[in-house]
Image (cartoon, rainbow, N blue to C red):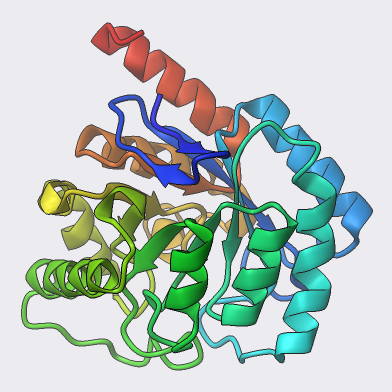
Length: 279
């Protein structure tokens, strides 16, 4: 199975997709904000996702929903580090920290995380690439047009697939030049981050082009607004749409799918891989 190995802190491609469970310790995330604000609730939620079949956990303390405002370093540290520290010794799967801040990444890696998931592809904080490199951590480089507060204000592209792929290719080369090997890099086309519903669908129809970048391909579609636009379902009722879209991404080469509803996604992948005859 494709996994981030907890001890080696490596990102490795594999044909059976891995499930990354989303654990937001925020009051304002678009889907589950406020559900796991205490360490106890976050811990219980994480253990439930492991039981449901999560291969990785992604812990985030700052919302990146459309329109979100940034928070202070101190507040993000207070939200994230106690949860990572509580979980790392107790869960048998790798932990990712979803942050753009070097100090949050540094403390989370020291507390037992092994991956940094940066929605700005290591561009927001000039110190974060050194933190990733020196820790030997895995890293997710995501594409985003603009910033969360303004990213959905009429995003425009001439060719969204080419532009997003070219950006990620440049960021891979940039990271490699600074001592982060391609084997520890994942890319995420950033569905919903500075893209319209039409852009999102175009990216999903052409994911195979991102699978050729030579890195793990991570895709996050869970409960996103464009799925609500297609189904008419509110955020909390988009599990089926999220599984369908994520499984379609796996068909086109996604190695990791980032989801809120771990159980249904893990079951779907088990059935799909059994049909394909994969062990």
